[in-house]
Image (cartoon, rainbow, N blue to C red; front, side, top):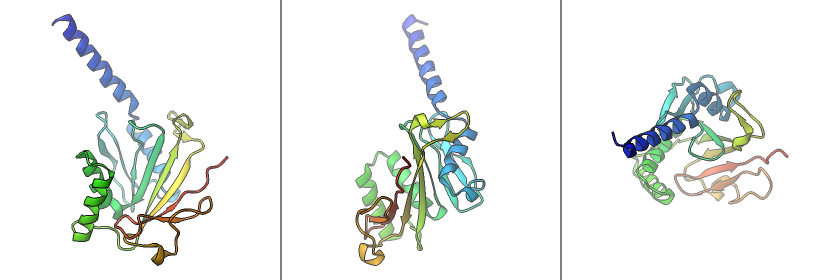
Length: 197
C-alpha cells in the first residue's frame, strides 16, 4: 500500500475513533436523557439516544407514557427532552423530514398540511414536552450530575389561539406562560422558568 493511502487510512481511523469517543455509553445517555422527565416517571420511560455512527436509536423500551431523547453529541451544550407518547407521530415525522434535509418552514408546512388532511395525528387533549438543558461544562459524565440546569415546558394544544386560551403572544414577566404558533397544528404554551442566579 502506498504511503499516502496508509496516511489517509490512518486519518479515517482516527476520525472514527474521535467520533465514537464523543458519544456517551448507553447507560450515561439514559441517565442524562431521563433528567427531563418528572422524577417519578424516569425509570419506566422509553429512551432514544445515539449509536457510534451518530444515528438516533432506541436505547431502552418504556412502559409508561414518556419518551425521552438523549443529548445530541454534535450540538454544543447539554439538551435532553421527554414528551408524552401521543406526540410521537409529530416528533417522528419532524425527525424524518429533517433527515431528508427539509428546513424549519418546510417541516412546519408539510406537517400542517398532513395534520389537516388527517394523515398525521396530533393529541386531542394536549400533551407536554419537557426540555432540560445546561452548559457543557456543567455536566459531569463520570457521575451523571448536572449543575445549573434549566427546564422549559411546552404544552401542545393544536389550533388553540389567544382567544381560546387567554394567553398572550409573549411573556410579560419571567416564567409567564404564553402561546406560540396559535391557530396552527403546532400551537403550544411555552413556560420557561427563570434561571437560578
